[in-house]
Image (cartoon, rainbow over all chains, first blue to last red; front, side):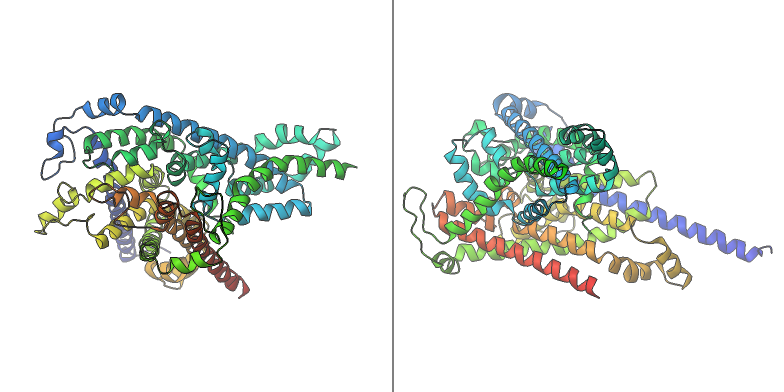
Amino acid sequence: MTATAEELAEGTRLRARKRRQRLMVDAGLLVFCVLMLMPLVFLIGNAFKTPQELLAWPPTIIPQDPTLENFRIALAETSLLRWLGNSIAFALSSTAAIVATSAITGYVMAKFPFRSINVLFFLFLATAVVPFEVYMIPLYFQVRALGLLDSIGGLLIGYLVMSFGIFLIRQNTIHSIPDELIEAARVDGAGELWIFWHIALPLLRGAMGALAVLAFFQAWTAFAWPIVVTSREQHYTVEVGLALFQTGYTVDTGLVSAASTIVLIPSVLVFVLLRRNFVQGVASTGMKE
Amino acid sequence: MLRRRKWMFAVLAVLPTLAIFAWVRLYPIAEMFNLSLRDWDLLSPRRPFIGLENFIDLFDDRLFIAALINTTIIALGVAIITIPSAIVIAALIHSRAGSKLAPFYETAIFVPHVVSLVPAALAWKWIFDSELGPLNAFLGVFGIDPVAWLHNPTLAVLCVIVLCSWQALGYAVIIYLVGFKNLPVSLYEAARLDGASARQSFWFITVPLLKPITLYVSVVILISGFNVYAQPFVLASDTQGSPSHLVRVLVYDMIENSFSNFRIGYASAEAVILLSIVMIITVIQFSILRDRSGR
């Protein structure tokens, strides 16, 4: 059966309509994405502005007369680099602690079906409901009793374990490590620790990567805990340093923006490079069902 | 014999994590409940038991009530703005899945969620600035007089909601995108054959099927909304620079009562109330989920 000329014309019209719709969706999304990125563009723009231009009305978006002076002051005359160092040390050690505890615990929870282990698992999960801010104050006194206020160790105590990490590794172990594999290794006389280290861990690499990225960002953006635990300027994390920076009487927008830009660029870069890991990690938080 | 060895390994492997958990989670949580029933000024060695007095005092405390109201408005406001926009944006991105622009859309919308809170809040602080900010410049084009966004307590709450929504949106969109990918294609084909329009399929198939995800995302956003702290701290500091004075929130009030007013028991009672709110939200979530699966 051949199509009539009318039907063909109808088909072309439909296709043209579809294409028009797609163009409209793309245009709408592009505008929206630009709007979403706008605040960050403003911030980076301000970092390059001279004091005069910062007072200009109407405000400019792209600096007319870009200067690096704000960056020079931020790096040379503030403790920004120190705070960055503190944040990196804190975030890396928290990541290591969370990945290590989650990997071994999640693996055991998945592959050792003892009742006592299951009870523990629900205990771990149940405390995940309690927001950190709720038990932060008693925890502060524990850290103080240990003499760890104003130190990376003190910061770390709040971020040693993550319930969700244990959950994530457990789910991944169940899905990606067959029982037969472990049984076969046992029959061959492998010890439990050897099996965990040489068989389970390599198979969990993807999940551990996603968890590591999540843990790093969680510590990197922590705010309430660092502000409570640190009180001396040289021990601040970058978030606390920046926040207290701007609560003076006068705010030097150029300087604050330059400092913020220095903080933002590595995290956005890391995110763009590790986007897959990150999205996988965040998305898996929503796939409980 | 083997079973025994397995059991030993499991226990030894879990023990360190369990010890850490007990030390940094279970103990402080228990201690918070304990302190909430006591009067303690941080310095005195005595911590007398006073029953529910802290809780009774809290509900006569105007600052606490203000914090509770502000925090509730922020949490609800962020959820009301974020959830519907996230569904629509995720649907649009999903419809363009596979196009070259899709990764850019995902990245651009997700970046605000990963950038550090304080730099992001600083960016918005400038946008809302009454004298130099681009928002007032933009409104000026339409002949609207400059508005003191961050100096009016009501508007400042709105600003905090906008900032928090901007950050939460990317998270919600990513979760919804996973949901869209798991939707059964056959259902849409059947609907199309029955003559349903795209809009009808969206309302009568997509939205109901995504309900569990909507529930989950709402709970996450509400709970993080009730724990909001950094955003008002930076955005709503008053002209003297006291952080968060204009938009008092629960966590701020708690920290102030602990470390400025030295009322640890009182602050712990606030923490108990914050926890109760979170528990109520969680229980509602679970009961709705159970209801659905029961049907």
